[in-house]
Image 1 (cartoon, rainbow, N blue to C red):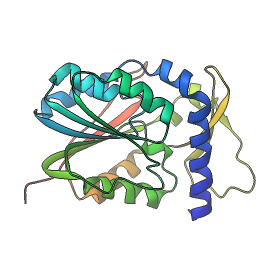
Image 2: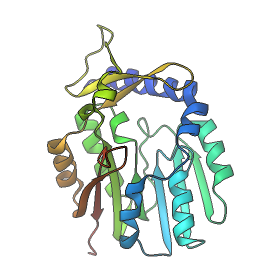
Image 3: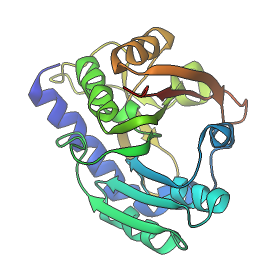
Length: 234
C-alpha cells in the first residue's frame, strides 16, 4: 500500500473518531470479557503501555484487578477520549499521550505489558501492520508480554451490512472495508479484516513466543481473536 493511501485511510479514521467520540465513549464503557483470560498471565507490579487506549477502559480493568500495582501509559490520537480516560483512571499512576500511532508508532520505553486492543483493524496496509507489531514487540521488556486482538467483523452479517463502497481513487488491499457507524452521528471508518492466516503471520513476525491464542467477546463470544506473546529472557 502506498504512503498516500495510508495517510488517506488514517485520516478517514481520525475524522471518524472526532465525529463519534461521545457516542463511541458511551458504547465502550464495559471491559471486554476476553480480558479476563489474560489476568492469570499478568503479575504485578506491572508497567503497561496501552496503544490506542481510547477512553482508558483497559486501564480501569487492570486497576480493578491489580489495584495500585499498575503504572499505566495510554496513547491515543483523540483528545476527547483521552480526557475521558484521565477522568476514569483513578487509583493508579497514569500517563496519557496524545499521538497518532499510525504516523508515529511508539518508539520509547519498555514495559511488562504492551496492549493493542481494537486497533489493528485501523492500521492501513499489510506491511504496515507487520512493521507495527514488530515495533511494539521492541517495547516489551525481557520476560514481558505483548497482547493484541483482531476484530473478526467480516464473519458476521450485521457488520457486512454496514460495508459501503470505496471512492474510486483509493487503491486499497484485499480485506479492507469502509463501514458506517449507526450510533449517534453517522460516520465512516476504515477497517481491515485480519483472518487466521494474517494473524499467524503477525505472530511469527513479532519475534516473540506465543503463549495463547483464543476467541472471545460479542454476542457469540468469538468476535475478537486474542494473541498473548512473551519475550523470552535473553
